[in-house]
Length: 261
Image: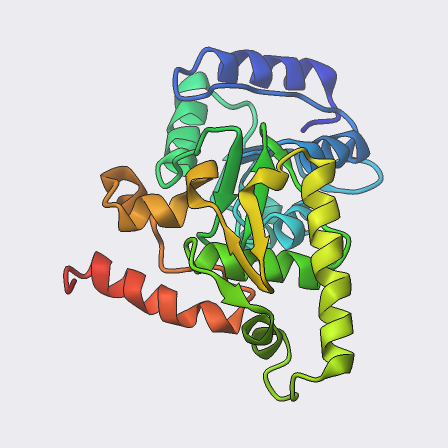
């Protein structure tokens, strides 16, 4: 992302020559870049700082808030922004003009801790929870719907009752008729979302119990517990960070990494 077209084209060209980069897109307008991020899985954003309208620091903050797993490296002509750049958890800060060697070093560093999962239906649990279909991020109508799916993913195919889901969502409230109706709304919305993305096959509901079909998805957590060495090495201690109930699985991951299991 750079508002200077010549510099943008040069950076894109250098990136396309790097074997570790599978795909690269260039943008001169922040709004266009953010719209593209809404629909595509991204590992790294190379970002100019001094831009009209939304500057690079503001854009980085927006990206990190919505997609915290994305690495950000600033490419700028000014050293004065360095402190502010790292306050938004940037992985790198390069001064223009940037040589191909320095750019490749920074890209390699930013991507070194990432392994992009591939597949028709991909579930990310390291860090925040997200669901991707053919590389596009699935959007949920309500946060509770997303949390229900995350909880089912965490159960790795084990059936879960409505009462258990209610206790997870509203731990201090008694499961009654009112909560049952509210839960029905969330489950119905979740099923509609999965249907919209043509992936309803991952979800199963029988006699009031719900489960995920693990064989239908590619999930970093499942590969982790299967012993995939690259996935295990890419784990950085965070699992479904937005959900307190995920701490038990996070603890199991910690002991696995530490060689205790």
